Each structure stands twice: as structure tokens, then as C-alpha cells.
Length: 287
Length: 176
Image (cartoon, rainbow over all chains, first blue to last red):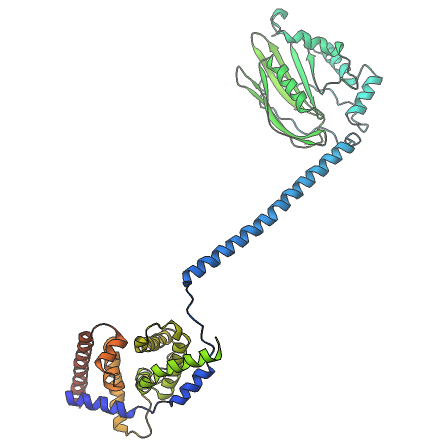
């Protein structure tokens, strides 16, 4: 078998074709593309790593290049907005002003209060100063009239305890509408209008400033109520978005409000107060 | 790279390749079992080896370098299944040579069939030793490992071939 195997290999050797001449190989090599000069000292992995680093660096650079532009654009937009507000905030009409929303979580036993009609609802309402101007012309403005009507119409609540139990600030609040005549310069954006003997009514006008709201909070704190504002946005000098709640600090009861449009005129917050019960019937309505 | 550098590189490559040119051709032909395809494979391998010739640091390893490229090229083509169309077109039917008798062609075809049944390393060692005519030391350089390892591979390969041939002879006798 060994010999037979050798014979097989011999036959295989003999059967093989002649190799191509070495000249042919030489020609092939001449036609071959240029050989890379020398193996570079930088390993392939390092090259890939460097490539990735460069790519990431480029991306970072691009990102850095674009992001400040956006910021600038936003800043410019804000600046333009401010400029518009500064230039002509007072002439914008409030024709679309109307009732937006009313949201009250505490309506257990509160009687539905009829809110006074908004002043000059039919006629186009001029901005704050013009309205105030009209108030100057007619000292008995609509709100004062409304208050007097309400006082006349509303009977004394039966549940109300003796007047001795009234809190300290209430008399002040009672006398306020008479004592302070709204004028062009002094008309407050937030007013406490006594509603009946122990009822209180605060109005947050669309023109109320954050300072007014602070003052309101300060006033309400005398009644054990605090005003929490979660979000507030101004469009020019009007409140466009505002949400939050009034909270009775002793019981934790809340009366929520959520203004989502510029087309609101005022937010009315009413409650009754006595020293024994604290604030009750907290209600927030909007016009 | 300048022209003179390129020429120098070619010269160096040919200095190393020329002594094993015929042997390398035989190896390629037995691997692909077709003279024309063998020339193609040989040409591909020579070009690939020349293109990466700069990476060869030790000229003594040239055989290992060249046959390694040949082995990888052949395997790569096998994996891609292109080899069926290119190199192994006549896998079971080795191309008949004009000058060879029918009996020789049948025997050679039988030998190639049996060689395909061996372990790839054993097959390669046998081709390199018996057909290409490399020495044991050269096969050690090409395949790597030790000299005794090469000897053992050759011995076991031959033993296996004998068994395969005796089995086929028995089958032929039985069929008759």
C-alpha cells in the first residue's frame, strides 16, 4: 500500500501543469498598484480612536456653534417683546375680555353668589388707565354701585356670630371703598370689598402686578388665608396665565383657580369670616 | 514611494519568491484542482503578498507569509461560496490533462478525493511534502509548529490515506 500511495503521488506530480513563467509574475508586479510606503507606527486601533475623537470633537463644535445662536434668538425675541410692552402697552384694546374660567374646589355649602356684571361689558373696554379715567369722571363707579347694591340686597347671615367676633382688619376693609376713592394713580388692582357683614370679596384684576398680589397675600394672611401662585405669566401688562390656590391655613381647605387666557377681566375671591369659624365658603370665580 | 524604491521592493520580493515559484504553483493547483483556477489563485496571492510586503519584517518568514495568504484567500473564497464557481468548479472532477492518460487522471482524481477527507493541516502537509516537494524544515516554516509535529502530521496523513484507499478497494471488490 505504501508503494501504491507513492505511485499515486507521483502520478499527481506528473499530471500538474507547468507553472506560469517568472517573467509573467514580474510583469504582474510591475502593473501592481503602488505598495504602501512603510507600515506606519500608529496602530490601526489608535487611528480609529483618533478618528472617533475628531468626529466627536467636530460634533461638539457644531453643537456649540448652534446653541448660542438659539439663545441669542430667544434673548432678541424677549427684548423685542419688552420693547413692544414699553412702547405701547396702554393702547391695546380689551374687546375680547370676558369670562374665562372659574374653578373652585370648595363649593360644599356656599350659596351661589351672583357676581356683579363686568363694567362696560358691551362697550370696548379701554386699558387700565382709561378705565380709571372714567372712574375719575364718575366717582360712583360701577364697582362701588355694585357693592352698595349687594349690601342692600343681601340679608344679614343667620349663622354669623355677634359683630364683636369680627377680626381686626375687617372694619378697615369695610371702610376702604368709601375712604379711598379710586383715582388714576391710586386705584388698586386688588380690592377688598366687604360683602355683607362678614363676607369679603377680593378682586384680582387682569392688570394686577406681582406687588399687588403680595399685598393681597398680606391682607389675606390676617384672615388666616394664604395665596399660593404656582405659575403666573404676563402678556404685556396683563396677566395671561395664572394658576394657584387660596388656602385656609387652619383647615387646609383650598380654593383653586386657573387662568389660561388673556381674555379674563378679573378673578373674584369671596369668603366669609368669623373669629370662631375662621374663613368659610371660600370661592373663586372669574370674569 | 519613488520609482527606485518600488523597483527595489519588487526585486526583493522576487528574490524571495522565485525559488518557490514552481512549488507554490503546484500547491495552488492541488488546492483548487484546476490549472486555470490555480493560476488565478496564484496571481491573487502574489499580488496580495506584494501589496503587504512591507509588513514582512523577517525575510526568513516569507514562505509562512505567502502560504498563509494563499490559505486565507482560499478559505475566504470557500466561505463566500464563490469558490464553487471559481476554484472548485470541478471539485470531484479534476481537469484532465491533455498529456495524461485516462488511468492517471482517474488515479489523481481519486487521490484528491481522499486528500479532501483528511484534516486540513494533514492535507496541506502532504501536498507540500509529496507534491510541491518542500522539505520538512520548509513545511515547518510554512505551517508553523515543530519539526516533529510536521513529521507526525505527515505520518498520520499517510496512514489515513492508506486506510481510505484500502476501504475503497474493499468496496470495489465487494461490488464486483
